[in-house]
Length: 154
Figure 1 (cartoon, rainbow, N blue to C red):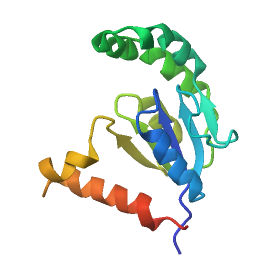
Figure 2: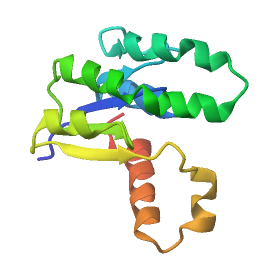
Figure 3: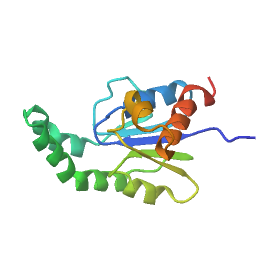
Figure 4: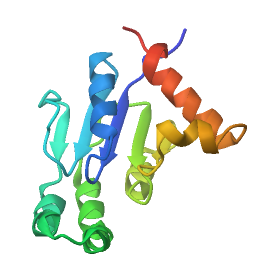
C-alpha cells in the first residue's frame, strides 16, 4: 500500500512553485508552502508561511529597472533565507521540494526518510521537449508532470 504523499514546498520568490503548491493543495498533498512572496493563489493560511525577512530586504529592489541588480541582491540575501528556514518547525512530510541554491538548509533539516526534490526555476516545460529528448533530465521532468497531473488522488 502506497503512503499518502505529503509535500513541503519552499522557495524564495514564488517562481512557478505557487502554482505547484496550489495543485498539491487541491489534491490534499500539500502540508506546507514556505515562500517570500505574497499568497497570490490563496493557499490556505494554515499551509502558507511567508519569509518576511527576505521579502522586506528585497522589496526596494523589485522596483529597480535592472534585472541584473535584482538577481544579484536575490543571491546576496541568501543568508536571510537560510536563517529563516533553520528557525521553522518541520511539518510531517515525506517529500520536500525547494529551488536550486536555496535547498541545503531545508534538506539538512528534514533528514534521510524524505524524498528531496531540487527544482530549477529556469527550466521551461514548453521547451523541454525541444532540448531534452532522451536525457535523464527530460525523463525526470516527465515523471514530475505525470505525478502532478494524475498520480495523486483526486
